[in-house]
Image (cartoon, helix red, strand yellow):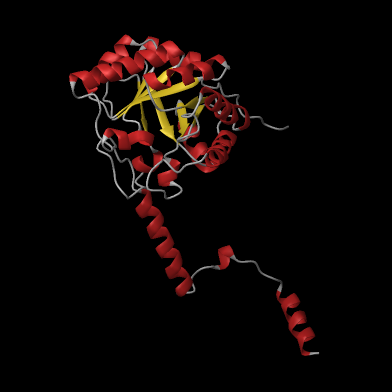
Length: 288
């Protein structure tokens, strides 16, 4: 008799809203491939972001700006195939929603319908509220992203903390309210003071997920490659490194090379054999 795995309850937007209401912290992490999706979903993560950060940590771009819709679609599909429980967010890359409402809805639909994402994320506050509202009206859930927005970091003077001055803090607050009013179901708060994150989290009815936003957010997100030590170009202040997977893989490859050079790999356990009589018959046939 076949044994079927126990059914897994998918994390829904209503679950995330309930978690905020009950004061339960929400966990979120990035993933960009089928095996990564399997691992983080099995670990019990609540939300997986297929982030445009893949441009840096997977594709080697200097920042997220060059990432295309085709690349986001490719990686989103891979992660979605792996995930049974977590809510999967597809990130909208730079210039896939900036030009017009129509462009924003079309590309959101591609990630949602063709990519299989449970929702889409875009960066920007008040200036993007019309896009968020239109995507939401089209029936696609939208995750907002305010504070430091990496796609437009050049306009902010680089990758710098936002919301430290009174005027800038009010701007970030207004962004949060505008996106909530437009229909966003959650917000990423990136690189803003923890006191500002606390105020936003208290004032909005939707979950806030911090990345460099302090402990008072409803949840936290990190880039997988950062937290397991795979991305060595730089490590942001807000990252806690939980493992050194880079060195583990490096040492494994070095050991593999040594085993080849020493002829200790492959050993008998990694090899196949013929019966001795068959070997002798083969040798005899070669002499004819």
